[in-house]
Image 1 (cartoon, rainbow, N blue to C red):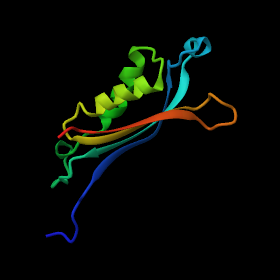
Image 2 (cartoon, rainbow, N blue to C red; image 1 turned 90 degrees about the horizontal axis):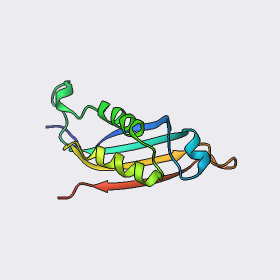
Image 3 (tube, helix red, strand yellow; image 1 turned 45 degrees about the vertical axis):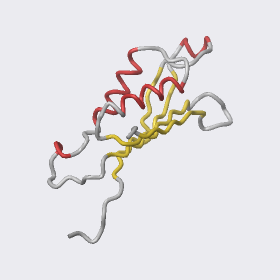
Length: 124
């Protein structure tokens, strides 16, 4: 028996930066904006017994899925984009909670970014 108990496992996608067609203003619709995503997924607590990808949630789906979402349409709001990413996260049964944030990096000269964050937990 191990001298510890795993209470939480998380997958982290940090500072994923990409260009997104997003915004309500004419100048925002004219050109994509630099968006930075941060995502933390809490997954079921069972640790893999072997060093095999089949025993864990392969996180490639997250970056690929976000890329597919943003290439498919224009988003007016960061809130809508983050909601769609939350839906993507919970499409995997192993995800029990998720935190998603997006930040527009070039909106204001006197701010590093302006963004939105949403957190959700799977219903029992």
